[in-house]
Image (cartoon, rainbow, N blue to C red; front, side, top):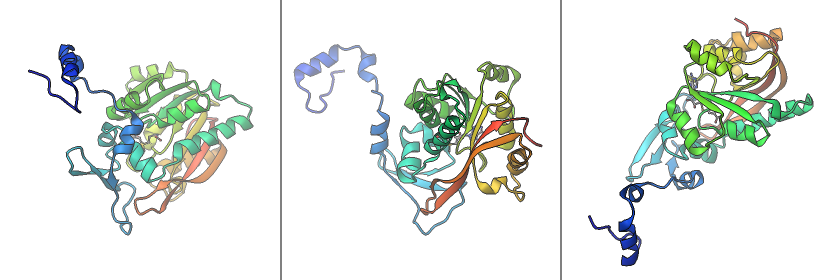
Length: 284
Ligand SMILES: C[S@@+](CC[C@H](N)C(=O)[O-])C[C@H]1O[C@@H](n2cnc3c(N)ncnc32)[C@H](O)[C@@H]1O
């Protein structure tokens, strides 16, 4: 079939295009993340409406001109669209957790005279690699990602290639022994779990499995809703993390309440940010 002129291409140019191998002519050029992010259009529910964090949603303009609804917990669908995660959570809802928590980690390392260049991090709930980018920026040389979704791994490789030494798609509540050994072989001395505990995401048992993969004395960096750490908590985190802090198994080095992001009604969502040393097994 003769090539069709596009964007005013000359007939001479058309002739050159026609001589190219078909595979190259059909290839879609990779889209730069910032360009993809800037080109997306989305709308939030009306400001007066209130949703629980598990139920928040927005609508996004699709390439065919229709509007598609995305629940925020449909990470698989969100990660498939380059730039959509960053557009929703960073550009519109001002998420700050990875930057804030890596800053807290850097301060804690500095205070103890420890170098970021010694860290070998397990990043649980790694998503599309924003934590790995922040960790690399302070000089962490080695990070291994774990997420339950293949779409998260694919997005990390697509949007932030080369930042993870390894990336496992795994359910840590049922980790096969062989995969546990593969993760242990990375000799991990730090765990980061940012914006990923609770709310139907990472359950206590998966956190425990990841924690057990970290050396004694290792660094534990996590964000969590403060209500999950209280005696009244029913999620299991209060008994496990709250009790471990009280017993000293988890030695808190830095703990700050901070604004994770805005909710869709523009009210602040506050989390506890904790940087701690692993001094023993988790309670419970
Ligand atoms: C809000 S995103 C945060 C991603 C990343 N930590 C960041 O701060 O950019 C939550 C991530 O947790 C992952 N996740 C949810 N449940 C999980 C589970 N049971 N095990 C591992 N990852 C899980 C999701 O797939 C998603 O990538």
